[in-house]
Amino acid sequence: MNVRRLLLAGTGVVVLLLGFVSGDLLPTDGLVGLLGNDYLLMAVFAAVGLLVAVSVLASGRSARLEQAEMPDAEKPVSAPSPGEGFDEALSDWRLSIPILGRRRRAALHDRLRRAAVETLRTAEGYDRAEAERRVDEGTWTDDETAAAFLRTESSLRADGGNPPNTAPAARGTRDAARRTAEEIARLASEGRQ
Image (tube, rainbow, N blue to C red; front, side, top):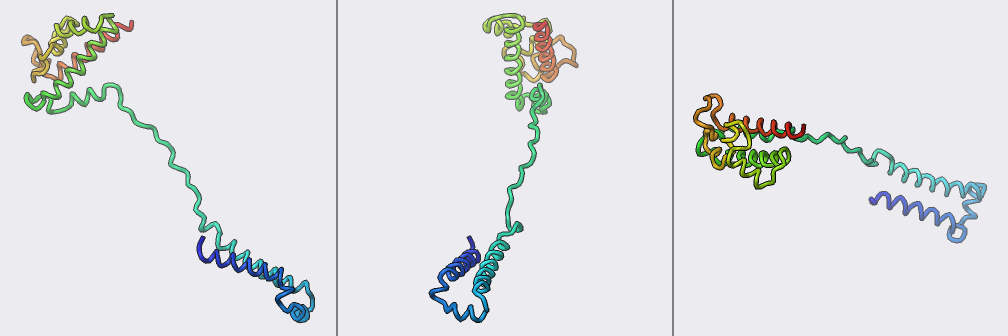
């Protein structure tokens, strides 16, 4: 509480106490004679009390009142769409550079290899060891580019591990990864049917 409110409250208490004990401490007979009636004396004390009460009420008016504010409405959380991370990995310009892109190619290779193994396990019913063996040997699909891309260590090269007899348009890590992802999606959709 601030000092002003304490002073107003103290003044109100003092006036109230004076009203109760005024018969003994104050010369009330002279005041009653001056006012002409003892009710008017009590009305003076009541008026002083009301004045203090009104000033206390005015000091706590709503202009100084801080009300709670409603928080902002919740906004939907944006989530990445399926395949967005894969598309970002393919759009990285460093993917095609032989030395700089080796780590990115390795991450892309591992991601697609895990997806191919899991797809073979769920769609074809192979156990993990058999699925990994088929992916490593390249016998998991008829697509030569996809099979070559996931063969062990072949996709870490900048040419994507493509067989030498493929068309020039299909060469490169991006195209090989894209074809591998399409082949994995095809196998997964065939397995669901």
